Length: 163
Image (cartoon, rainbow, N blue to C red; front, top):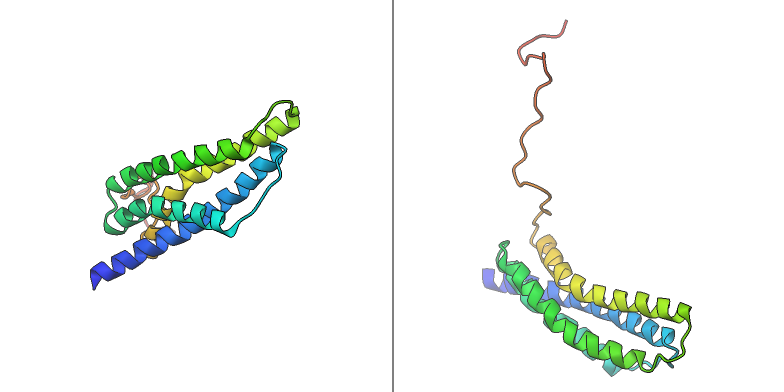
C-alpha cells in the first residue's frame, strides 16, 4: 500500500509540475516567434507533446523525491533538465528562424523569451521535487535542520526573579 501512495505522489508531482511549466514554456515559445517577426501558429498536438516531454523529463526527479530526501533526487533533477535542453534548443532555433535585419527591440524580446524558455527547463524538475515534498507533508529545509535556542542575554540569569 505504501508503494501505491509513493507512486501516486510522484505521478501527481510530475504531472502537475510538467504540465504547468510545459504550458508556460509553450507560451514563451510563441513569444519567441513573435519577437523574431514570425507568424505564431498554434496546434493542440504541438502543445500536448511539449507538455508530455516536460512531464516525462521531471518524472525521475519526482519519483526519486517521493522515496528519499537525499541527494539522489537532485541528480535526477539535473538529468531531467539535461533531457529538456535538447528539445528546448531545437524548438527555440526553429521558432527564431531567420533573424537578419531585426531591430534592437526585437533582439531584446528574443533574449527575454529565450531566457524564459530555458528558465522553465531548469525550474521544472525542482518544482516537481518541491511539489512532491509538499504532498508528502515535508517542510522546506532552510539552513540547518536543528536550530539552537537564542543565547541568554549577558548579565541575565534564568533563576533571577522579576520584582
